[in-house]
Image 1 (cartoon, rainbow over the protein chains, first blue to last red):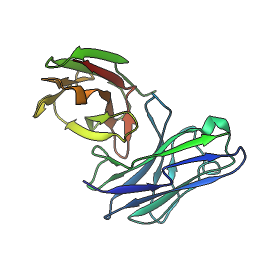
Image 2 (spheres, rainbow over the protein chains, first blue to last red):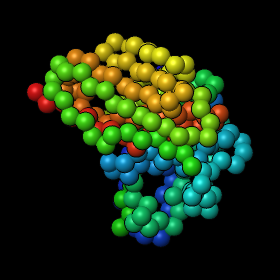
Image 3 (cartoon, chains in turn cyan, brown):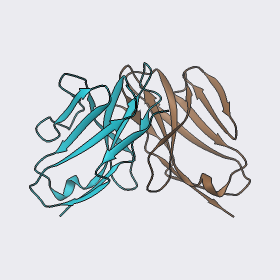
Image 4 (tube, each protein chain N blue to C red):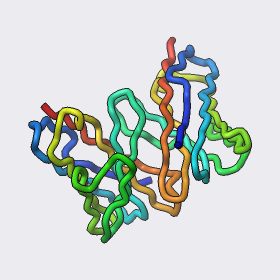
Length: 115
Length: 108
């Protein structure tokens, strides 16, 4: 398994501001992902964080709204930009250590509330 | 489009057996995974099926039929701590697509 930490664990933000969420892994991993999860709902993939290059975004998510960085094999950030109340959600990073995305390890999540 | 359907909720009593089904329709398929998530917690990996058949891991078993685009998670000897949400997920070349999720409530 992998030990994953996320910061902050929760935050309450004002509309129009931005928040950067950090994800740190205790060892090098091949793949890192960012998900969003509304309370009581399933996980929606936002993007795959690629080391040293632009992230790969899923349909409905764009770089201007959710810029992602991954400067090395153990760290990534997700920024939620120009926030609105609709962005209130739990944001989770996950990692894969071996080839293939099937066994993912999730961070504890960041609970974001936008007022 | 891609979809993975699960029952929204299942209830059972301690000691019972429960089966959570997952039917999928995806553009790519490498395998079917199952994750458990307790309230307020992060999803944790339970099992993975790449080939047809049954995989057993302790009290939990997972089944896959690729020809039917169907799988299930079987939980035996249910315990109160098994109350959680369960998600199936289909892996393609570079990502996972998660199912709608099933909330399992175990009663004493």
